[in-house]
Length: 254
Image (cartoon, rainbow, N blue to C red; front, side, top):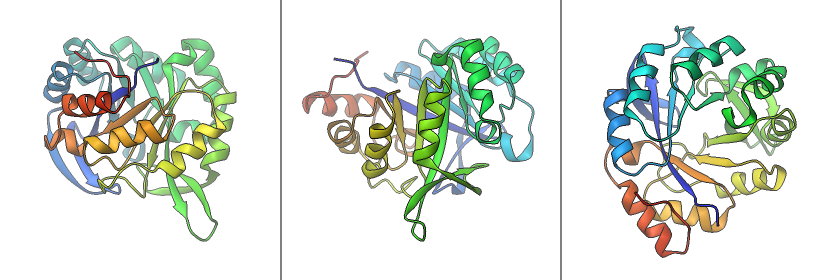
């Protein structure tokens, strides 16, 4: 059986790891390089590094930080935030990233997915989707710019398109569940897995180890991602993996 992945996420603003609730009220957590080193030794399967200031402020790529982080890791690292072109992606991969995460840029120019998946390989291209339920329309819509701007793109239609264009993976964040620590958005994730066959990373809502076990037992996602509970040491990655394995979920142990 394919083993499920546990992925800590480092949301970085102006070089500092931050975390909020439903994309608001950000608080500082610490240095991204030091946190990456810690997670590398604590059993994380991968690491996601998102520069959440880059897209809406136009910050330059933090290639020096990426290089320092990559030197400390023996696990795959995905970099996202402010990547707008094939050249940006090439620079990040050359700095040490294994994969890139695209959100706003892909929505602005979907052909970027085709171009970059052909150039770098589908396995390098992860499409991040910040999805929010809109009661009036009775559907999920995509947001950009760190959850600040709503688009007219329906999330379930978008996942189908990005798979067809060559994306190798999806990172789905439920904005309604983000930071609430009440469990993942199973309804959204099930709908997405019914729509696509590429791997899905679930983000938004983890509050304890049981939430990960429930996620893997109830949905067919490939990985669970969290930030706050790992940063604050409310639960360890080993605790999550131990419980998941106890429930029959295949996990990789370090």
